[in-house]
Length: 114
Length: 114
Image (tube, rainbow over all chains, first blue to last red; front, side, top):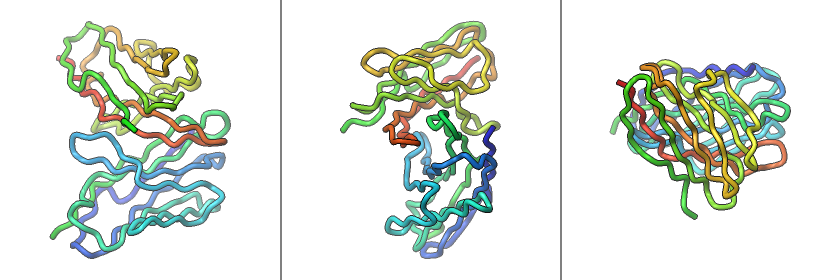
């Protein structure tokens, strides 16, 4: 089955810096890669996603890149703010007819210091 | 549109008991997935329901079961509870695309097994 590895497990940055989180996946049939932000006491919130036919997608301060050949994708957050502090998860869907199943990375605890 | 709702939000049970958790998806969404989140194992897929049928299943024992009703609301049941079942149980409501699902999570039900 699909395996998703996420790095780093913790990331500490100063306000205004950029943050990058990287993930690798194993199933070449995966075609959808969402990123979630989870704040304390809440469920994961979908913040951006990318499909396998796209190399990069941007939404304001957040961008995601995908390298299908290398099977890795990354989340980039620019001009970080204290409210960006949270746990971030990458995920990949399963191939074939199991596209409703997401496999998640282990999460990255992002701390943005004012 | 109202988001995904899960009830109850918190639950305390003792070993050997059974529990039923409920999930109401976003209006118009027909697919519901369930995930277990623990500090040690992270986010793990339990099962997915679409149009009252289980479409995908994760690697959990048969004590974990679910169902979906005609209005797309879903329930999951855990029988003969074990201490290791203590976790945050998350429901995700899916907007079906052609080859992938956008999944939106509820706040979760925090289950504690004593």
